[in-house]
Image (cartoon, rainbow over all chains, first blue to last red; front, side, top):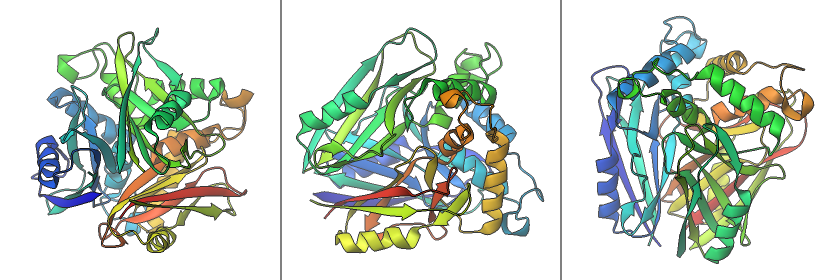
Length: 137
Length: 137
Length: 137
């Protein structure tokens, strides 16, 4: 069994942002030399997500508006740390998820035709990272 | 290390539907010959889910009504692709999840007594598929 | 390839409760002897979650209040089993998730600085369990 580990780093311009990372994850799979296995991609921060969906700007706007409705930003409205202003980010990340696990087949990410991997930032403008861990043969 | 890959195909009669697939996933584990490992089951489409919960029709009705409340169908209300009519499906799938990872122990899915695996369709009436990838020994 | 399986048991005092389990999961990794691999941690019950977020009581209060808003308790308001009183628990668990997959690197859980693992109970006061399955080398 082989294993491979890589960190991807981000520093988004805005507080809320989606970053397309399919290419970076695929590159990690290539570097690993693993042909058959599983690839875990997870946010290492608790106010960010990794998720799979369409690489389409209209949909991303839908997600952001929807998350804001389900878990609105509020400077003082959350109990988190006696009113830290990123309470909404912890909730939004829970909807979008912490991680994805992707099959590796024949040395490539085994994704459906429209599946694209995204980093979802809900409390950005500082350096944060994603972990890619691949195991297999 | 062994690995095994299988696709399950669906063509639901309705736009929204849950399909019980525990038996098909267990059958893939049997075919793989793997006794100890991990089994990934994921939707290959971005308007569908794979999730684990109770095989009980009342609960499935609860899920559908709840998802419709959280992410209502709207023919023109989403930005997705300038108003494609399946915007709600991308949101619903995010609540129910893309994938599950199930332990394989002694050649079987290592599930709790009431755990059952489902394909969740939110934009059906066409051919779509689920990926099963098992690694282990 | 090695594999290791362990069950963690819980019997919470209240119906709704979050239990910090990072130490127990790390202990299972140590027992496994696995240095590089993947660690699956999943609820074996369908009214409970395993999730990763901050070990902070204010945030946990935020989560509970938020989940109650999104999926309120109702003694008779759900179709589940003709009105079983834990319908809300099945919905809440769907938001918080069934499982997490954590990388194992150098014999340890490969977690970000604030990542902590929790068991999320939404229908407690009885014995329930979590499965830890680790594969790797």
